[in-house]
View 1 (spheres, protein in one colour):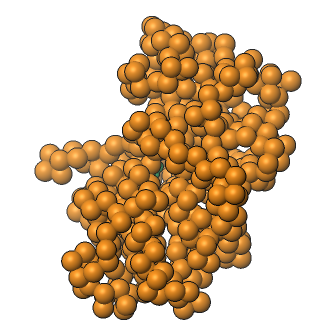
View 2: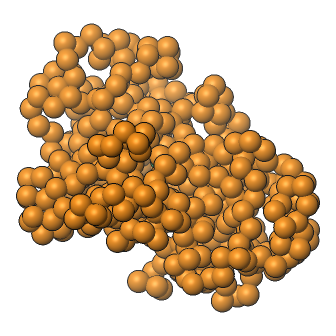
View 3: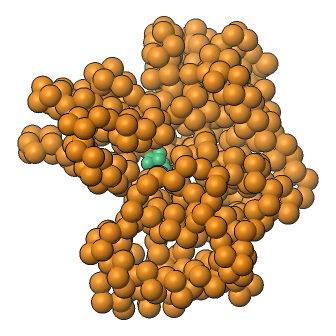
Length: 447
Ligand code: SF4
């Protein structure tokens, strides 16, 4: 059965063009699981990485899988995927989206039984949490983690959240950004809280405030702070918890770890976990002004520091940035502060319509000392992983480590997985689902 173009989401319109490199870097062979190495060896032996060689090679594995699974197969990728993998996924009828739209795909498409995602683990897990019992979710590379989420593992956050719950009881509510494991989404659900994304964080925080709750916002301190600013909250009543890269988690909340100590926590309207995204924290107000002084309109993602957001001409989610790039009138000059592969794809598409787009950090002035980088962990999903995953699934040999179930905790360095069983997993699904469903209800009511 032929696999039709997915009707689920609008296509990105990104095209594969002859001569373009398909992958910006090759992963070393020992980074592949043993089951994927034969595919990687073949891929690395191709004379170059252009569509002319990669597509016929990929077709050999992907087409039989598409025929085998037919319309029950759904391929998904995130906008931030490196190289040209988004174009490949789309070429095979898959859908490209941001994390909110991805999370809904299983639940809203019950006919899709085998869902294969090329993105980071938390995104695949969100799909799995909302999936029906007869839908399977697979990730092409389980070591593709999000660094922000890796600085907010459950063993780091739970002991701190427990202290806050003990002190504030039902007055405390947890809001978990989509970039969290299912275990943190379940924590949010168990406190009556909700998940949020960068496009609806203001709606979700506002919903919590209307209930008079004190909020623990995990894991991204920047999105939390930017949302507070957007809502006009008193920024003096935000407390940022210690940098998890230095302190880990599980520390005691006291005068030694919290600026202002317990009185500051008692006064706080929102407590921010200290995590951040390495890709977005590099942006500064000086970078924004450098481009503005040269006639560019600057848009940034709200995972960027507050000063950059305040200086920019606009801030919003991946979907907002993509729409702005695609709808900019001919002759526009735009600068975007977000993940590098996304900006490169947007610039490539916009150029065809006479729109000029640059990455915020790509400033031709050595005093800025940085350049726009991509999400390296997400890019661990490359063509050999896509080919291998689909071929192994067709042969009935999908490696269990690539199967994604709600509650899975993956160590992105070793690839080791800790999986919940039975009742523990059911309880997690119940709470995590509740927090996702609250987000959906709040978002749809606010649209
Ligand atoms: S860009 Fe940053 S926040 Fe987004 S998935 Fe990558 S590491 Fe995580």
